[in-house]
Length: 81
Image 1: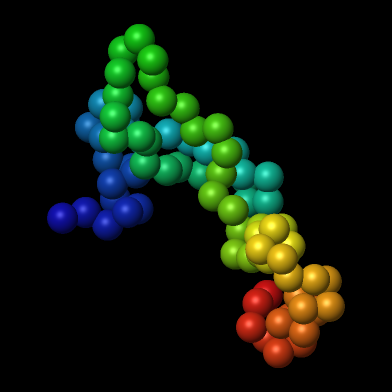
Image 2: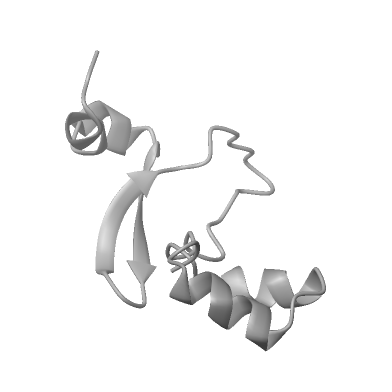
């Protein structure tokens, strides 16, 4: 069993295309596990990076019907970041 760090630096995993480099706008370039599904004619690509903690919280709460006042109260109570 390998750790994540060992897995993304394993020469065979890299040669098999199991590791990709991802450019993150806030954290720079890093190695990540590629898609487990590999198709020769329609290869998988990473289109976006994972969101930061709380990145979409306000947007989601607004879509659910919360007001900006509700969101401010949740932030003040440290319920959301």
